[in-house]
Amino acid sequence: MASSEDQQKKKSEAEHFDKMVSGGSKEVVFYDTDFVSKLAKDIVRFAIDKVGNVDGKKVLLYGSGVNLGPAIDFVNAGATVVMIDISPKSVETLNKIIQSRNLGEKISAIVMDCENLEFEDGSFDFVFGRAILHHLDVEKSLKEIQRILKKGGRSVFIEPLGMNPLINLFRYLTPSRRTPDEKPFNRKEFDLFQRMNFEKIEHFEFSLVTNVGIFCEAVLKWKLFKYETLKRIDDVLLSKVRFFRRFCWNTVLVFER
Image (cartoon, rainbow, N blue to C red; front, side, top):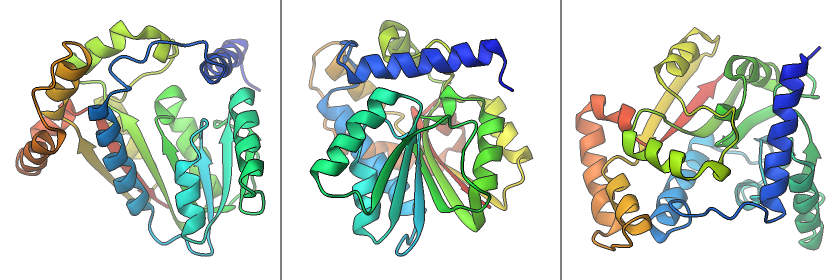
């Protein structure tokens, strides 16, 4: 049984995202810029490609929020999709969109606690999540994901890293975009991943030099750099110098059962 502290944390998370969906959170600086939009699209496309062939498969969108985009991509590729989120408002919004687009036969959305999945063992071929694990008890969540994945199944997550001072400043200046309990990943999470009983684990980092362009555009209102130029620099640096990867903004995690 969950402790009262744990229950309060989950209640706080649900209320935070209910508020965001209802328009109660207005801080969008740093995140809603052209630079970040291009970066996000590149990362999401990379992560979806890492999921692999979903034709005829069942995909769980884990902590989905109100973003139907990945679900549409998976359905178009032949999958059946289940979306879960702890926020009732998010799920209500999702279901309205799903019904308005006549997608009810292929996509369903359910209110559910990601740390206590209400699915039978081996229910899904794939799990996909974006910026969700760092809100949770990571070890407990990954054990649940292992349980509901079929043998040979794969889970892919896009998660923030917490080792870049510039990005940590962004986070400090935009508190309403986060909940008190979320924790971007550091070395201890990567050590934990290696102790988990997955058949294979990979991670791929994004946005190092690109962060300079984000800062200039979002904070200083200077459009000094092109995203494509800084991305090319990132691609070279991150492929050549492994040490720099820890200072990136995001990582794509791939776990195979």
